[in-house]
Length: 291
Image 1 (cartoon, rainbow, N blue to C red):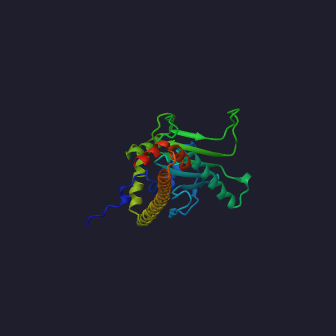
Image 2 (tube, rainbow, N blue to C red; image 1 turned 90 degrees about the vertical axis):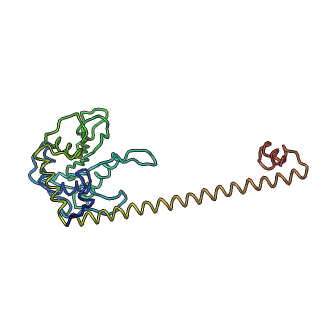
Image 3 (cartoon, rainbow, N blue to C red; image 1 turned 30 degrees about the horizontal axis):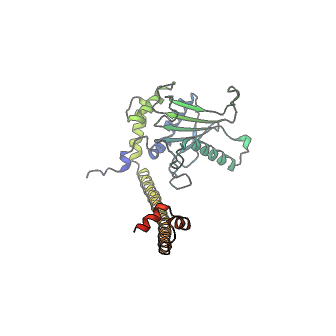
């Protein structure tokens, strides 16, 4: 019996669902962090259950980020970003403000667990981007807060934001990170590390728990799309009714003005006086009179 191909089988590492499950493999995730930050990490601990996926709506949609802490109590937030989201109403890009939101979530989570603000752990928010948000061809864009009047002065809040540009050509990265970028972009295996990643993906796709989780995820995403579509239809209908009502009122007023102009013309008033009385133009009154 031929195996049925599901949507999960077609996913690549650039898919946020699959990316999260790969990052939940400690060996791979730990190696990526070590290569990016040029440091050794004794161990990492996931701040969420390993076999769960956050599939629920909040004010910012489905969350599929990976949260990690290392033995030095540095906290990491990793996410795959395929598209460059834009607010359709304002035309503004959402990614910068999203990093601020994620930083707030990390800090709030630590404070709720009993830490004082001066005990907040160092944090890294890391986006794997399949586009060059800053249009400077850097492979990695790293942000820390600095004084505008003297850029040598850094605000030591220990909060770092990194945008990894998989299309970048400037700046040095380790061979394994570059091979990972190549694998994300084209699904091409160019190193032992990406071979390990590819083999892990096959293993993940054959995991029944993951397949069940993805089915749940797909259904929830469909529900959200249906809800958004329904809201859009309702909004469009309401707008159409409002516009129709406004057009109807305007049309009614014009008919009323025309009827008044006809009565005044039958009484022998001048075109100019009728125009003033009805707020119609002289040309409009003359056209009514010609009828």
